[in-house]
Length: 134
Image (cartoon, rainbow, N blue to C red; front, side, top):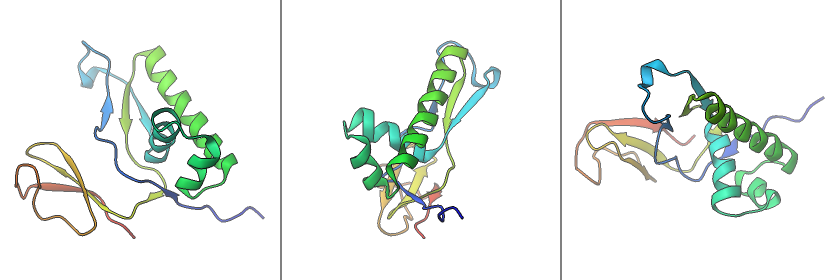
């Protein structure tokens, strides 16, 4: 019997929602989805320069599970680059300790320990809640 699937821990949301090739309108592009945990694996290994053991521990998952997530992330990014597709960062099986919200006015993402009612950057109350801790 397989082990129960652990929810992957994410420190913070990406500052962007995705990438697209230059010069092509978004509506004309096919898309590749990069899950939040896949984004986090790329961030920890390639940006934070952690090894896989450290990154797996940070995400609260086993090293083999981390390796599978990281491989899938690299494949998605390679597919988007080679085939000229947009990358959309969304979804997945993850948890975080903070609330995430994107301001609809200034487009910035904010994280906070408590629910947000106003953007701390532009003070707008028009927020899109991206994640609530469980």
